[in-house]
Image (spheres, rainbow, N blue to C red):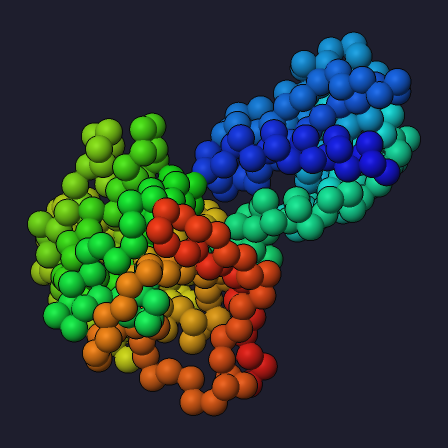
Length: 371
């Protein structure tokens, strides 16, 4: 119904307020509506370990929750975590009906929350604004279903597809507004990854430069541990918070270099490196085990190819600048490349918007069935 969609849309707006702060938990919003259509309570999950959306909405509603309908963007949990189960709270409050956008794939929840409510006599319906709710929790859902972080690959190119000039100059291809958007992603996602080539060439700080912004876990793919101990990525962020760095190296990487990086506060993790390059799938599995739900892949082209060849990029975001460079300058995707068009990586759900003078093109990656 139109009313159900309206209330669920409001619940999604509330859920989004937790962006970048709830991981490894999902974003969740809840709206409680009395039998005569009045909103009596609202809530959202503000941060991991904080109150769940349902509990916050029930607290706001008090006695008015009895007989109300709860609109929740994700199936209520039915297990004891850092907080008690939301199903029990809804049942105890006397909520008559629960409208859920979609089920939670977490094996501790999936379907159990709905069953528990129904067994207690609460009416439950699932599916209102499911697509919008899934899009909001894209990172959490990807991590739950695949056991690895959701990966967003970000690149800035010229109109003729170059990421640098022939002399290697790349600052700045995109404009200030585009760079600010990237800082919002850094604030929102759990980790940011670069290859050692980018570290040696650009010496990036990989911090989030937003007021009150949170710098993500920094991840470096560096088979032979060529990362200089004095690299800027080891420095504290603008707020003085110490950097958190994980370096993925080959098993035969020099031990003295590993020791020097550990002295700088890095965690050095060895993974299989069949071609001298740390295996992306092994590194992502390790990050998944650390409850890293989302990763911003920032460079460079060789590392990007490693991710694509492992089918490990979920979404791309390309800033296209209104500039032309020409010549044999590099592009955003290196490696051996695709030999035939049917093997291309395609994009679906494509959107484009102006960000300053640049065009931002985003889409979900669809991998070929061949190649």
